[in-house]
Image (cartoon, rainbow, N blue to C red):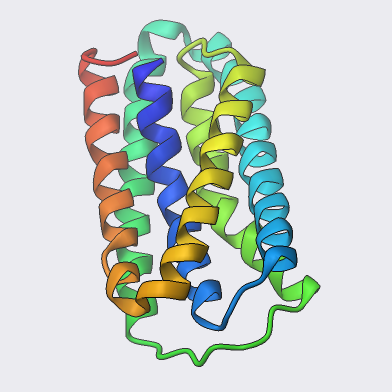
Length: 182
């Protein structure tokens, strides 16, 4: 359960960062609801798909190897998250109005890492619905906090969210692969 919470927070940091960016352009109650629903839906759906695939693969390769595979996937996802965060920092983006199609694309893009995370957790015999619900709830909470912080604090908070999320994924991956968590 600890590994699930740590993973939920680490993948939720990408939504946190995205929500800060949205919050910079101004928010209202409708925006909060739309962002929370979109981010939460995709953050819960993607690991659900990944968990189902991960359980199938774990059954095929055996659960004794699944921890190493799961840890490796989380480490690679963490590295990718850090690299993406640094790449995005080089591109200056002006605040834009939040259109529905842009929100859905953003939510889907931010949840792609959850597919890999769900796949990794699937190899660890985690309850699928519990994991999806945990990740979704944490994501919604972090998104709402990110909207508020973005609205109040600007880009200062957003700067390191991707790197922190990637580092947590790497650490959790190492802990799972070595048997510390699991």
